[in-house]
Length: 82
Image 1: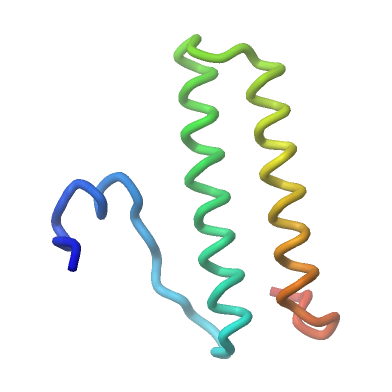
Image 2 (image 1 turned 30 degrees about the vertical axis):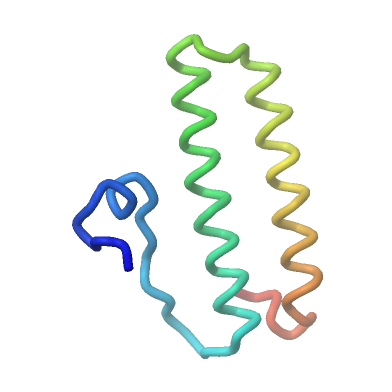
């Protein structure tokens, strides 16, 4: 079991899930948090000059498409107002 005060918790923080619980909503929330974390890293790399802006854009666009697929697979139309 990972140490909650360890480096993994520091590097990959997760927020609590609020709202009406369902396994699908919980999984989408986890996917959304992962998207946010990865976008933050990509932006930091671009701002630090480690990757060019167009590469950062392409990576974020790919992550966005993956998140949309996740949303479409996990949530129904009446749950779209999250």
